[in-house]
Length: 173
Image 1: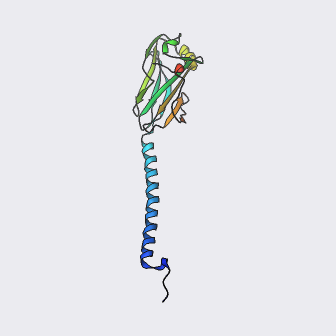
Image 2: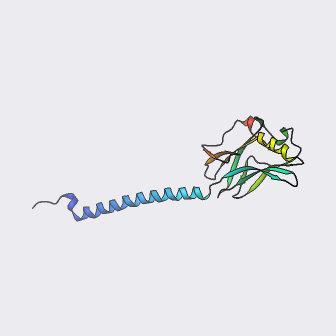
Image 3: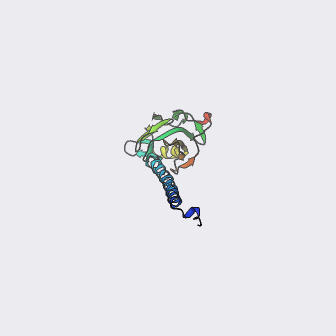
């Protein structure tokens, strides 16, 4: 009597079938987990935008920072320069008249939240436009998953590994 090959025995066929099903299930589970993780990150993606505002009748000018994303934006630091020189506080710009300022560095912006880091009153439009062109604002912010971006007034965020900056250049207000 000849013996059957090991792979033709019924118990081996069942065992190999179970192994194949297990491998397929594992691959599907890994793919599903990867997809779920990507969806979770996308569902809390922050997007900060920076733009100037002008209210003609009242001569009020401001810069606004808004989180137009779907998740909170954790602002790690701000770099602000005027005439290509870093400034620490808004009052370092001598041409600014009456200024109301708000903290922008190291804060959390909820989705759709907007803040005005600076509000200027009593300035003519032409003065503001000239001044506004010399102000550069750069923010580094992260999501709750520690994905980080660097953005400026062009509003084209660039993904970075982490928010790093030279401490002496950081905006303090």
